[in-house]
Amino acid sequence: DGVVGFSAVTGKRRVRSVVLSEFVQEGRFGARTGLVFGPESTGLRDEHTQLCRCLVRIPTDARNPSLNLSHAVAVALYALTGNGRAHS
Image 1 (cartoon, rainbow, N blue to C red):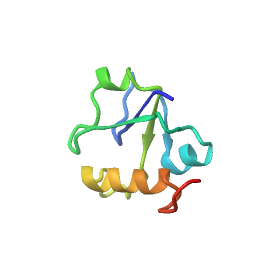
Image 2: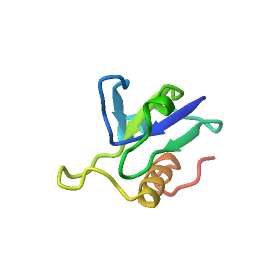
Image 3: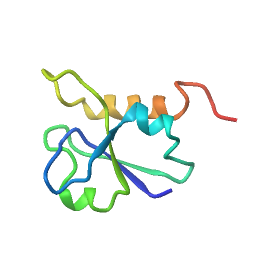
Image 4: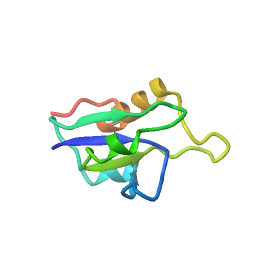
């Protein structure tokens, strides 16, 4: 399963990120997937993204390119748990 990073920050040395909905739709996570979130102002550092098997971004409006950390965690968990429905 591995570690998945969540960050709105992009850069030359970073792997291409996938949108959260695509990540969920493809079922690219499991019960043993670790989630890592970066600070709102800087996102994950390159040294942290290199430890992740993929990066996921939560789409936002260009005028507000990042979410508050607690909001990003809430949105990600909501999407990963089937929009609030428990998986069987």
